[in-house]
Image (cartoon, rainbow over all chains, first blue to last red; front, side):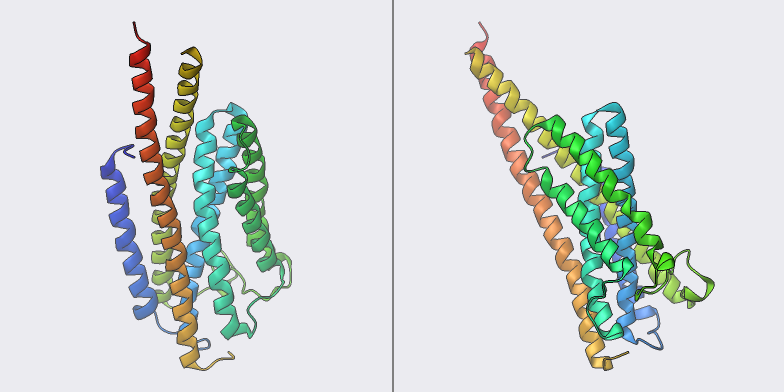
Length: 235
Length: 57
């Protein structure tokens, strides 16, 4: 399917791959190993690198869903859905890498604390958001329900973020915008984190754009089907 | 810290592998959907255009 200009997408893809590779080299080679955790702490760069663009993706779902509910224009539903899908993929990465990091540091794969549980609930809501669309045939109903569920899911983001401040949790305190003693100090660690954040943000933009084009293609397909049905009825 | 450094590397490898596997799965689904959609769009456009030609006086 050929939609949109290929040049900006190619540039975006090349930038994403280059930043991702640099982030990998910085996270695995250049950034020093943590004194307490050793090499396993290097999971942190991509674990956090995934969740921030994931939050951005969910906030965009919130924005586009509200725009949809106000305007009832399907383009906002398609944009929200494309963003929700990418957010779900990033959130899955976080939920998979988190326990792999937790096992050697906490001694357990999972703790039912506020941060982990709220992240899991948010993931389940967006899993439902993505899956629901295949089960509702009525387009307007599907778009309305998606918008409502998207708003509910995205409303979890502040709760997930602030859960480490509001509750006693096993999960470490925030590193970004956190307390003075909870941040990372080594400049190479900061660079590795910033590169991972940049790489996943670029990846989000690339995937969101592709997802939006796919959703637009789907809409065009439905339109053609309706036209064909009308022509068949006329014949 | 509960694990030996050698074990640590195993966890590190597992975490980074998981990220690439999830990303590869997502990209594969996206590419397959794109191909299916392109095929269906082409077929439908062809059919609709044929029907419109036949309908025209």
